[in-house]
Length: 315
Image 1 (cartoon, rainbow, N blue to C red):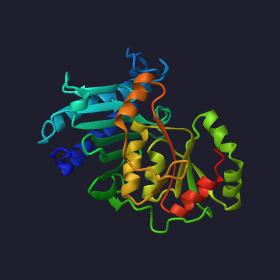
Image 2 (cartoon, one colour):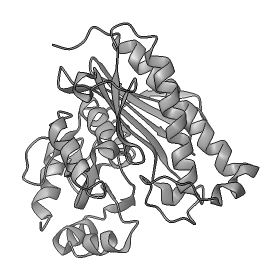
Image 3 (cartoon, rainbow, N blue to C red):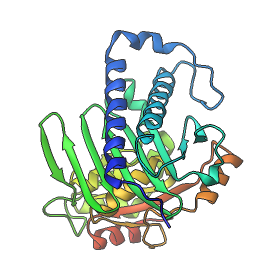
């Protein structure tokens, strides 16, 4: 049985918190404070290079998000405690001293997904997903495109939506008006920011040849962005088969994708939804924080296209 809370309040507060984080990151990376971010932040949970200024802005954004969540969730009747799971903080329950298993909600956050793009101000996302521990399901997801200034969201009892603050336009996420059912002319999202991932994609010769023969295109994306772009109709499919994504990176995309009507499959062809084994996810992280549980997938608006891509993968 789930707790008695207002889903709309949770969604509204999560939107506000993610927008606050987005605004902070944009202002920080464009402002005079950018130079001071080269300073080292002493935190054993952060393993990034000491010279990477996103190490500092990641932590700042995370602190801002957690402080805002504590303040906002106090206003929601029915929520007495929650657990945060993020790449930077790890696993922590609030209020301090609360037993993790007594927490009503688990909040997965990635303050800045795509940090290698943030420093050059080329991109980056702020991600959040709310998981109801008792109902054992994701109930809210918010994904903010930091520099394009777009906000995407979905909740359990509503469809997926987006708001573009630059063009002041709202739109429903449904994969676009004419989703592709074949590879012909399709745009496929891959994560190829690191050499080993680029090589793994290049080595998928059957899929690469099919993409070439059908005049399809390869897009560069990362994290939940891979799936959210498909939900918005900016891409036709998303594929991750090399390493997989940690839960805090991909859970927002899974819920937004599901509510947008996407087909999301694991590499065995089984449907993926937003249900988790929390004990398993937490145990993997605690065993080795550098090796959290990861998920590989293929996603598309058309099940036919998703399965076509899956059949062409050599995994």
